[in-house]
Length: 281
Length: 314
Image (cartoon, rainbow over all chains, first blue to last red; front, side, top):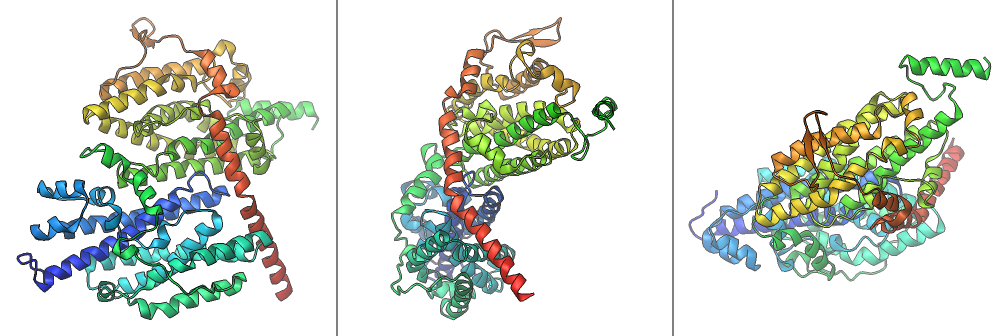
């Protein structure tokens, strides 16, 4: 299937595209995992602190599997393709040294413009309602897309997706219940839930934006749009939450154009590897 | 039975190493002492999440991040079972939180020290969890059943954490110069506070005697401290780190290490609230609690609505 001899060959281009898509899935997982992990020790209810940390661990675990796979795909690329793939100086130095890269290099040495996560996932926790809304939109997307990805022709992606589908099913149940609880709780919780949904809505379009490599892996964004909306509307109706009126959607995450928040996430996430380069921890 | 015979029955259970269970009669002082001890322990777990939580977003590798996150989550779990054990003595979790937030209840002073570098994650696991295990293992056989059972679980997880901490230290100690420096610096800062974790010397410990009699405590502060020092000094040798105590010396006659004077002034001050992070830790917990109020209210309101709906439907 794969030829490593010619960077211009269609299969080399396909390998690069598959690598980018794998990174996109990994970045989504890492960034939401990072945000959720910020709650650890600060949750409103001890049991929910534990539940949210569990979810963060699921995302982080998936990020690791995907980065490991991305590293494997990258290390197989022809050297010319490798040299041009990432723009950060430490990453270029590492690649120029001829070493293979690993999961931590991908997480810690890429600059923001090489991160491909959806903008939604880097949005700050703000409060419990924002955290829930962000997770709910993403969990519904994951639940649908992992179902499709479980049949990806790429066996590694399919295996990771199959495992993740079980987790996403649970995550969606959890975030769904909280949308309902807050939407149909007190006046204050209703107001906060509605505001969170309204404010984050403009970041949801990007999740289902049709994309060629996603489609080759079985995820057809335009076909998933309706099932995704069905989940959202059903839960909103039970939660007495109005569908947001806004139709303008922000995008750019998939191309490395992020909101201001990602830079701060990376400043913390990458600090150790950048400050103490090349060490074992 | 008269109160007198209740007391006799209780004493005979204690003397025969039989567990006291929530429905058994128990002296008021026993109940109070247990509530104080178990809740202090629970609070320590919850406050203890903060210094380590401080490094979750900055962990140096994804593997370390996952391990640290899971560890801090375990602490939340320990808090949960300990609060539940305390609840069997007739006090609610909310009351206990209130005692913590108003500064009425104490928690382990060690968590009032800051975590300044990644090596602190190693030092806390190795020393703080190590000291905690020494304190806690005897409690797996403590007289109060629910507490003893909670402690069995807690200790299993703590010993896992201690090994993880030691492994972080070992990696640093075998690493580059700057990593070694980081490890030594963390050791210097955490060594003495860890020795203070065993509490004041026996001669000044107000609760020890009665607590040993009730098997709430099974070894004295000084016995546990000595045991910890003897074990830990050997581990420091494996790491190649210097114990920050110029008076530390093996005493052939005693079969123990002699060690330098502990700065009890510092200890008293940290207990009183003057530690480097006392205010910060409590403020963080209070903030989490206050900002979570509307969430808890919403959950209750929704549960009530759901119940009413179901009642109507039935």
